[in-house]
Image 1 (tube, rainbow, N blue to C red):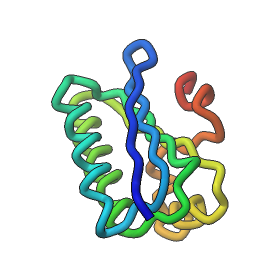
Image 2: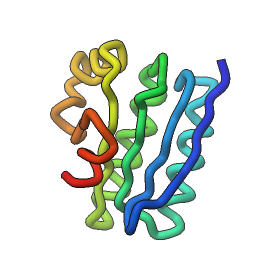
Image 3: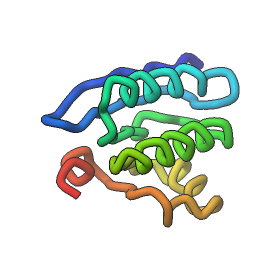
Image 4: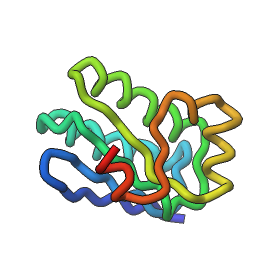
Length: 111
């Protein structure tokens, strides 16, 4: 399955919407988009994973790496996700305690 990654801006927050499967083959596309947003000075990020059907450790690594990068610039990275399958990956790895995970984009923007 292909991966679609799009970006929009809400005030000073970049919203990266991801659709499809994030795995060893597609994670580079997500990494590139997030790195470009950060390079452009956007260190407040929301990554919307609601349309993601699969997320592996490579995808998690991309998210963790970018979280560290934005935190070093006093920024943050929040996740939007309601899929039990994807949320289970965050819970199993303990990353649900590291990321702010929200049920809606509005919740993530307002947190």
